[in-house]
Image: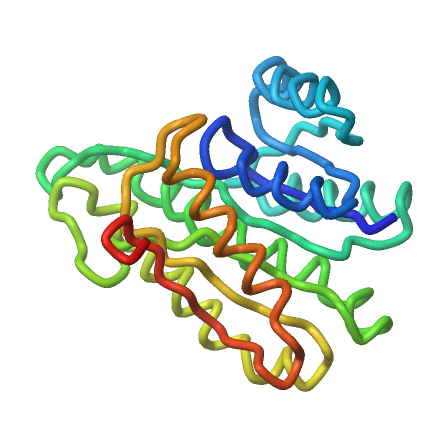
Length: 220
């Protein structure tokens, strides 16, 4: 059974994407900072007959992210799909952003994704297969002055996906991002649609891999 690891598994896009892959036979590892809330998501999935486990991770802490990946690989042997969905959803302009929080926001928004990719890459390279899927955002294309640290983070996610795409493709690893140009709430049509975009990217034939898909309700 293939393994799907979600870092930053929340009730919206994270849950919907995990469920989409579970429908295709994946076992799920849901990881986030709040164990109780993540356990609720796992129980919801298990009630539908899916296999789901819970881990705790601080996506802004590189050691926590690397440790999570190592533990999952030790238990399950491989991670077939990594979905990095963590983000600090801070609403703050430049003047409003507390100085002491900015680096922490970036650590969660982009630093954790970089560390996660570093951590899963070696075993994916050995197998010459795997996918690293990153949740991007429309703020990468049109930065918001009201969500400045998130905009910078999503720009970083997009740069990471585009920068790793070609060298990782040569190693059999598909790195891709869905640039989500919409606000996504739990159990919404937007969440399900964004999840479908992730599945489509994963399902692409190797000779037709792309690095980015843009989801907007206007495109559906």
